[in-house]
Image (spheres, rainbow, N blue to C red):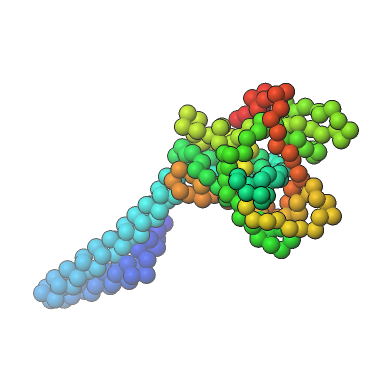
Length: 259
């Protein structure tokens, strides 16, 4: 009975009506046959068969469409994005006397589906003091192997900088160097590293603390090899300043917590 109910349910409203009509016509044909009215009974049985066949087709079609949709969903990567830490830095635009802002986000990315994929690019949209900004990444023009900061951010291999401020030097591994043709994102295997988003708009916020950027909401997005976009939404994110540097004492490969 459960299988019959599932069949009727899968047929949908139109298919269910056809199946129901087939049953009614079949009952009438049997009654007509018992009354020795064979000619009308023949046509009734034929109509019942056609109606039942149409209902069966509708049931198959609905199940087929659901299966195709499920296969399409599972045949594309599904990336889970996690944010471990973020910093902002400022640099001059090439050939211009204007500043641009870099947000360096340390991301952990896990592919939850079977197809392997790379990361094409990404965007970061965020609100600072009621103004909306959009940055693009990964900005390969940003060169560094360490980031100098004052925060609790740690990935392993940190060095304390000998100065009065007690700054910390953290390795600066790039996410795009961890995800490449030799090491694509495979199902269940995470990769992590910095992804740099660059903003060319002029930022303006209440500089009571110029070393902390107050973000009220942010959307991190990465685009995979299939042009699928995967997002991470974050509410209330205070991004501290982190100075990008090239320091020979710090190597992104040393003590790096890879996946």
